[in-house]
Image 1 (tube, rainbow, N blue to C red):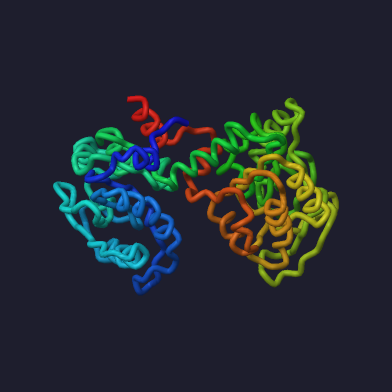
Image 2: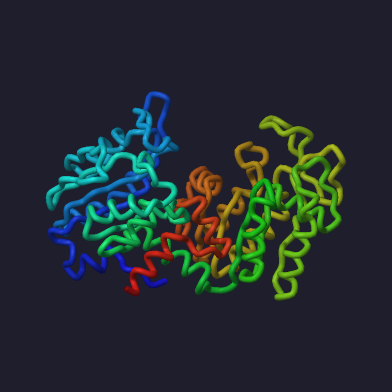
Length: 397
């Protein structure tokens, strides 16, 4: 995908003295006392800010935080804790500016944080007047928030449309490169892991991937629906019987291309959904009417791990079992360790997937960990993200 990049502008010396507006993703979790409980997103925003400051730009940064009501400020919606943490990480003052749409005072070599952009009326609807006011604040707009790239809002799309220059920051550029490597130009075999509770929430992803991948591993409640489609018993497991025809269509589409959806041969079951429920390994055909399937069995996990070890590219979204419960975590752990050990290029995304990666400590062994949940899923669906579309269009101007 052809977009202008912040690094390219800096190499050409185009930022000195310029006003740079960075849309970051600083939507960090807060505890009940209003303190930041996890600052990964703030730390991830620092490279773009530091690059612009070192290039001599006057830097403005904004982000959303939570789900505020437009035009109604509440202290809990404020980016004040983020400004304080950002100042610590950058080692420079980071003043927080409120009511900034009509003008911002910031000198070259300095940075300000603009208060929660979702407090501005018209933000979520991508209001043209608001977008033009934001664009008038800067010489260069930098989109560095992949987690918002699937939303066409004033601070993610409209400003990119009207700013004199619009480019991708280092985080967004890395996402573009990883997605291109994994989906547009993958090394074969391309294997996708799509797991979760419901087929319905990921049906479009399964359909889109069935046209691209060489192996489609399904897990969780999704796998149960596929087991039903193959006429296998699932007891009282979570499934969507009405989507059996859709599951069959995915299986047939894969088969027509000489590819496959590997169906579990053994599973781990329990009588109740609980962390302390006794776990039993059974052949799929032996699942009883009162059993709940909560993980893939060891034989299936070993087969899937071998497939991942032989892959050229791996796309991973979702754990294959209830990995939060230790007795039902072994399938997901086997998948995680295989992804980590495989020579394949791997890209992983989605909240539960990131939690599994953290649990098994394999962060440094995954080729790329996507920062955007919803945006990552929409890419897997084959959709063009609004933020990437406008940046690509502006690159041609």
